[in-house]
Amino acid sequence: MATPPLPPVTRRLVGLLLMMSGALLGLGMLLKVYVAVVSWNSGYQDSYAMLSVYLVGLLASGLLMRMGLRMRRGDDLSKRDPDTDEIL
Image: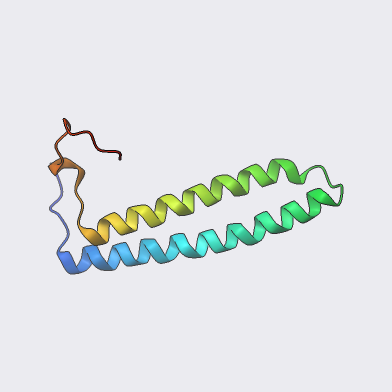
């Protein structure tokens, strides 16, 4: 049983919250990447593994923002034609 779609106002609000959370996560991850790079340049070797974790966090923040933007626009993947030559 599929759940009914959200009303347009609620979709825009949820999309805005997703975009804001992605932006804040991205800002936090950028600061952590900066600290990891500075400590890596100073000779601390354990920061290399954490740097890759922070970069994955940056990727997650970008995906959150993209998902929020699509929700605000009302893009629905089920309505798209799979035979077109689109990128994403």
